[in-house]
Length: 460
Image (cartoon, rainbow, N blue to C red; front, side, top):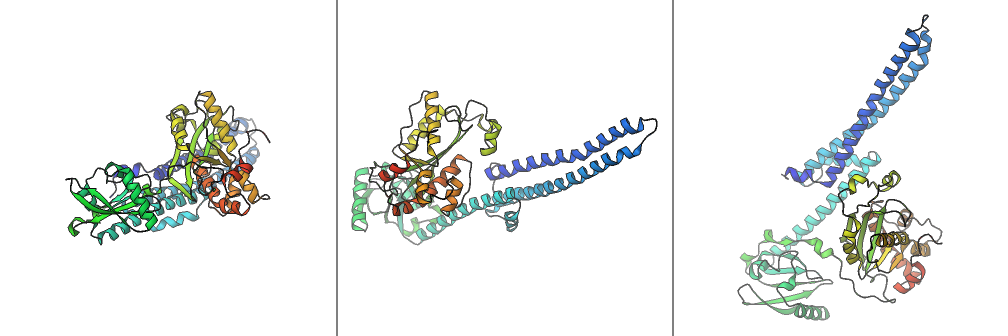
């Protein structure tokens, strides 16, 4: 059974609990309305009827009818909220059960057809569990494959991070440099491995690659080149191959490649891209402040969600109610967040060497420029493309907002009005537009820049 602390710390469970408490408070306040109406009716009766020398009880007919009608409407609304609370309470229980069993109960499906908020929550939870189950099933399948191969295996990414190793490899070569997350270059020479990978890819076959074990003995290994990274393997006694001891972090394989220099002739698909979005205190770029930053790496048609930024920022000014209603970020949520100067280096390093894309990205860049000037920070010097302008060249007659553009390109929309959610939707939109833009003669960075360079914010 999952420890209680794991269930308590679940962000999804926390969200459901908070909604449950909010709706319960609403119900309690709503139930007080009929009581207040009755008290007001009694006060009216005492003052205007009973206190009169000749009481006229007909004066109470309309107030009493109004009170009864208001009470009925109040209890009708209370019934709706009570049902809502019941669903949230069941979701809490089911989520606790899922934390113990690793799967959602069968009754979970009933929530997908509920009210908008309930359906949205249930779908978000389902997506999270589907991703986790897919990850676990992939790991189980790989461990099963390795169980039938008498070999030591190490899989590493394009940046040299070990994503998978089995017990035989770690026993022979040591934990350091072979455990997931370690750099393979801590146990092999960077230049020799790169040369071996090039030969393997050019010849499309494994090549010999000598290693030394923990005792200094020679190991006759071979290396195979993958599209990003490679595999080192060597024969091992069957008793050393223990599938239960295969260690892996498959998310490492989804990390973005290091940005490489690009030219005007670089195709849009090969362009190293960062999709960026900000949530702010308002829409005046020179005056308003950043409350959240979302960014995700994009390249070769893939959105690398393992390489993303999702940062809350303390703005230093109160967040207006109208802005809170859009993005749901209030003063309490950012009270303990770092100020922008503390996050600036992380943001600039994340964007370094990439082209920033965003929907109406001119606004985001103007806000960043104003914040940099305000805090005396180095400017964010990165080229950019506006996906709104690119979309105009594909569908000039369509509405050009992010929701409309995504729907027009057949994309699913989720997580809107969160910085990271909008950044991911924009990244998917950019990838979906690449082949359409190519058909319209906008195939490379230079052509895209000609039509979609961000305009200074506030100008036509």
